[in-house]
Length: 92
Length: 246
Figure 1 (cartoon, rainbow over the protein chains, first blue to last red):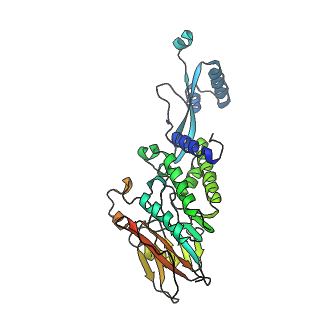
Figure 2: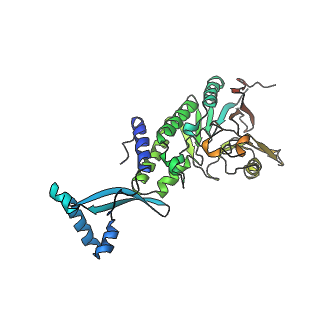
Figure 3: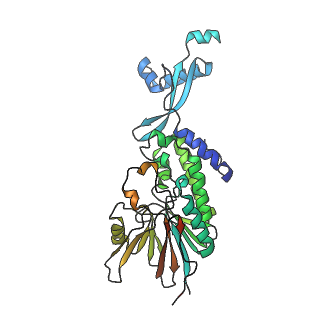
């Protein structure tokens, strides 16, 4: 969220706004999917996908990346998810 | 001599401002003490908010742009009794961005609008949008606009549409009087307070018409006015400290 408005936070606002404009659009690496892509791949419903993915994130079995994606002329907030490989889970 | 002194400056473009022009303008205001002060738009550059901005433009920091824009407005308006800020197409980018973006970026742009409104309010200024109908400030018979036409014919088109007016936007000091039954209607380019050589106009021949300048004058009680212009000549500005009636 933008910093609380006051003259003293102007610089912080300008810095964070600049950073937000340069925010990576997509996460680095492979295997990232949006909720819509997960639904399409596993042929699950919207509600079930949402609940399952959020439960897996909570359990630490999936990682989450909050980025930005251009849709038409609009830059939208977009979240990607990726399952954490079993190997990595075992070594934790 | 009865009348209110005014000064109109435009196109300071945040971190792209021309230091010599800005310093000369502030010094002039200290001496001339204009009651009416108008910033006719583009106080900020906001190049990273431009639709279709390149990666380089997006990477530009808003910090310097913001701070220098705020500083210019505060110093320029300080001491004025009737201050006005007309948003230019560059300033308007914050409003467009807030309207078109979504999520976090919209929050930041909406916050930016509030911050601009705060700066303007603290400078005891009114603010007009960048709008061909609603963005027109009337000082007696003189209209002040940011400017809506560009290129060689800009002054003539402004004089046809707005009559007696002064405008920014083109960064030039051209003038075009058109026929009018009450006397010639003249549109005059204010000139700019920003650098004339900028990265975006490196190959543009149009910049050869650009001038660092501002307008000032006296507004009489009946709405008539006397207009002057101070232009940079070899790094200096020459302007009258007093206006006398003969």
